Each structure stands twice: as C-alpha cells, then as structure tokens.
Image (cartoon, rainbow over all chains, first blue to last red; front, side, top):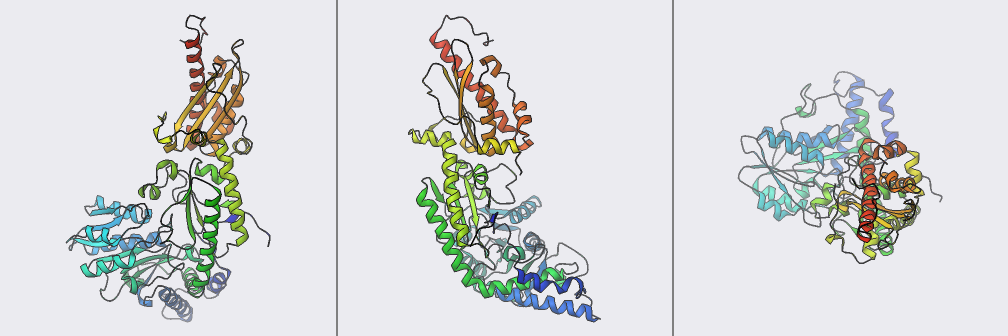
Amino acid sequence: MSLTFPIYLDHNATTPMDPRVLEAMMPYFCEKFGNASSRNHAFGWAAEDAVSTARGQVASLIGADAKEIIWTSGSTESNNLAIKGVAEMYKEKGKHIITAVHEHKAVIDPCKRLAKEGYDITWLEPDHTGIITADQVREAVREDTILVTIMWANNEIGTLNEIHEIGKICKEKSILFHTDATQAVGKIPVSVQDAGVDLLSASAHKMYGPKGVGCLYVRRRRPRVRLTPIIDGGGHERGMRSGTLNVTGIVGFGAAAALCQQEMDKDSARLEQLRDRLEKSILSQLDGAAINGTPEKRLPQTSNISFAWVEGESLMMAIKEIAVSSGSACTSASLEPSYVLKSMGVGDELAHSSLRFGLGRITTEEEIDYTIEKVVAGVNKLRELSPLYEMVQEGVDLSTVQWAEH
Amino acid sequence: MAYSEKVIDHYENPRNVGSLDKQDAGVGTGIVGAPECGDVMKLQIQVDQKTGKIIDAKFKTFGCGSAIASSSLATEWVKGKTVDEALEIKNTDIVNELSLPPVKIHCSVLAEDAIRGAIADYQSKQQAKQPQAQSTGSEG
C-alpha cells in the first residue's frame, strides 16, 4: 500500500470522523430535522427517537443507564458543568475540592475560578510515572471535601490514573467523584459502575464522532447526584443543560460509541502493537530518547517521547509530513514547555524536546515505519546542528554549564 | 504556525553549520541562550588579523526553526564584514529578512547577541595577546 501525505498521528487532539458515523448522521440534517423537544408532532418524535437511541449507545459504552447521560457541547462544557455544578449545589456541605496539577485546562481553569470564589482546592502532583494514586487522594480527603476530580487518562502522556481505587475511596467517604475520561472512552474499557464514578466527561470527536458534542454522565442512584446548571433556559436534559439538542451531533456520537464498543478490542490490540513497534525502533536507534510516563499503565495508542539535545518544534519541522504534537494542542501556540511533563519532573530542556504520537483507527503499519525512519533521520540531522549534542560528545556535563539566560 | 519560505530554506539548507577551533586566537565564540528556555546558539567567527575582516563563520543551534534560521542567516551576513561592520547588524534586520512573527522575535535577539558574544570573545583574545597594541577602534 502506498503512503498518502500528510500522515495523521495526532489522534489525542482529535480523530477523523468514521464514514459510518457520517452515514448515520446524514438523514438528520435535511429530512429528519425536527426539534427533539417538539413532543406534539412526527418531526419531533423522529428526532427524539434518534436522540434516545444515541443515549442508549453512549450509556452502553460506559456501563451507564441511558437516563444518566446529559448531552453537552463537548468535554470542556462537561467538565465545567460537573465541577461548577457540584461546587454550587453542595457548597453548604463543604468547599474543598481535590484535583491534580496535570489535568486538562478544562478542569484546571474551572477549579482556579472556584478558588477565587472562596473554594479550597488541593492540587495533587504526580510522580515521574505521571500517575495519581489512590493513596494521594486518601491523604488529601477532609471533612469538607465535596468533590474529587481526576482524569481517567492523561491527554499528553496517556497514563492511566488509579481510577477504580480512587472511586472506592470516594464511596467510602461519601465524596462525589468526577473523571474527565475524554481520552479513555472508546479507547479502553470504561465502566462507571466498576470504577465507582459519579460524574464522567466524554467527547465525540476524540472517538471518531463529530466535533461540538459531548456528554456528562451524572449518576442517578447511590448516590443521586444533583447539579446546579450553568446554562439556564428551557430545562432540557433533566434541567441540567438547557438548549435545543444538537440532534445530528448526538446521533453521530451514538453511532461512534456503538462502533467503538464493537471494535475496541481489535483496534486497541492493533494500535498497541504499532505503538510498541514505533517506540522500540526509535529507542533502539537513538540514544538520549526516552518514553515519558510509565510504559505499563497507559492508553494503547499514545506515546510521548523526549529526544535529548534537540528541540521539539524544530523536530516537528523535520518530520513535517507527519502531524504530531509538541506539548498538547491547546498550548502548542505558546512557547512554554508542557506543564504536564514538568509536573512529572521532566526537566525544562527535555520538556522542550518532546513529541506526542497519537495513533488511531486509520493508522497503518507503513505509516509507522515511515515515521520511525523520519524521526530517526530528523533527530540525527538536528543533533548535527545542536551545540548541546556537541558539548555532550566532548564530555561536558550540561547541568554544570553556566548559561547566559535571557 | 506557518514559517516563511526563507525560514524553511535556512532550516532545510542551513549555511555554515559546524565549529571552528575555539582555542585559535583569530576565532571568537559566542554561546547564548539556555536549554531550559528551548534555545541555545553557538556562533563562531574567524577573523583575518591583518585585514580585520571576518573570513569564516560557523554556527550550531538548539532551538526552533526560526532560531536555526536566524543563526544561519547571521553567519552569512557576518562573513566578509569587518568586526565593526558586523556589530551593526541589528535583530530587526533579521526579523525583516526572515519575516519572523512576533513570538519568534527573541530568536533574532539571540542571534544578534551571539554575534556580539563572538566578537567580544575575539576582541578579548586580541587584547590578552597584544596588551599595548594599537586600538581596533571598536572599544569605546
């Protein structure tokens, strides 16, 4: 099979929509265009039926009941609704929230806002593996803790936090547990029952569905979670999220969820094998290359690698036919090195030298082999240009050098 | 962000990559930046001590495409100039030549500093060698 360019290896940023998802959505643009809230005519009923099927499909993927799915515009909104909604609803009970420093900005920034409004936030820090452990959460819990929000899988390094164990602690202590599972849902088995999760954010476009639609799972039993809405209006979605439903998007999300459920085992086994091939080949051909985050507890299709003595952005130029990410997409416009890598104790110079490879359903073996070749050649070329590499070859310990900083 | 054609050209075909003997009395070396900031530039000049002209220049840069292009361009520009002429190269000239966007202006500043660093190193070597020699005119 021949290669077509550019090659897409940034599936943690977004995924292409599966053509089967588009097919499912098509009738709901021009023919079945009804408002799912129009309860008194056939157009509305058709839309409501479609939304209800999708609710079942998404619920089934995460082991929830269909009634527990609240449609949103995506994970950023879901995270905001979960965190701010719980904070407002339960503020009489307490004002302490536990989260982590290497969460996505869509969790960090709502927590920062709450901190300004008088809430107390505990920011857990991962060790070099990137994992937040249940013990860390247990130690941080207080009498007035109302919410723990810890992501399922990290978007930059793919590591999996101790979600099931954290869920257990939250149950014991009767604290609500929210997880931003945007990177995990559709990629690895996720069950809100097994994990003891009370609120879960997911997004369609990270799992081969359309952009602009996501959901928040809100537990209805043991305990029944209540939320103060952040968008007021017609009282859609059990009053938690007003606004006319994005029927086409929701249908697409449902179809994408059903496909992920069917194909997850096959996809993840194949991608894990390709990911491992990528890592093994690169690491065996280049010294000073290292995997960020623990190699064991990770998403199967994500790899984050540091290449010492070369800078990430220039390396991306060297492999310009391959779309990858240096830092996360949300921050790659800035020159700051990744805060996720920094939080794990990766030095600034290595954080500047890291690339994230995100494989997906469309990734082929040929693409991975091409990527290996290009990355190795690119790193070698840039090392020829690198004064740091030259110093290291001369036996200079870079940590002892006095740099003329700006 | 999109790079200008000139940046891409310098990145893909960097001019004057390499190193000169930093012990040589006619060689000046400037190293600026820090790995934690994502940029380190090393720029070296070889000065013909009779004519005072820069006859060769080499660089190595750890940094983004714009940093590599800025230092590559700097080596091209200093070659053939006298030390005094080379000191007149301003970072804004580099910004204009490479059409650097505002977030990349620091790359041009580093390149200017690297030129100045290399010249200062050369001049200090000259002074150490010939304490009572005639002034080169560039020391204020």
